[in-house]
Image 1 (cartoon, rainbow, N blue to C red):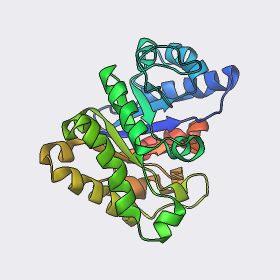
Image 2 (cartoon, rainbow, N blue to C red):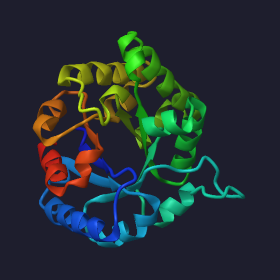
Image 3 (cartoon, one colour):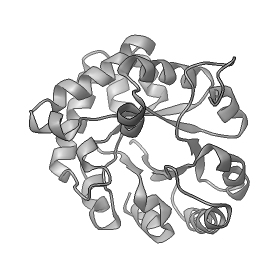
Length: 251
């Protein structure tokens, strides 16, 4: 059975005081979760990695970052290397989030390279794939999602997915209040799993595929009940302890 994963993406939010209060609540509550059923993680902005690592010490809550450089080291001012994230105790790193793709021009090839670099450093990439509203309305969901996925498979091989997590995030449902129905999410997740299965059925059966797109306490249970939905990549709700913990409990 695939263990559910609920990963909070704080995006560019936080302060030292607010972080401590949030992390303390999450740490205390997560101690009561059955780890064989659900894993929790928080992906925080770079400046707060040390604080989060220390606040979560001794906790089952995993630490993650929100981005990583495609370069391992060198004269790349402002970039952060995968080895640096690993040294700070990160287990996860988000790769190819729709905001990175749309706001910062990250293309499929760059995302695939970041995926490979993260793996090489021992990190678990949470690789995001998903279509925009225009692509969704044009009926291009499958083509877009599989194109993004295939870029990663071409670069690292299908077996690499066994060391990673995928996250389907319909861009039209992020921060808009719109949410794909559980059936819509399941349809795309099943498509992704079947596509991987054409190359390796074992990898397809084991890879965790998260749903990301306005998951809230009120809809989490129904979304997570779908057979191919293995948890969620949570945005705004991860900044409210009660909401994030309710989503973890639903998983």
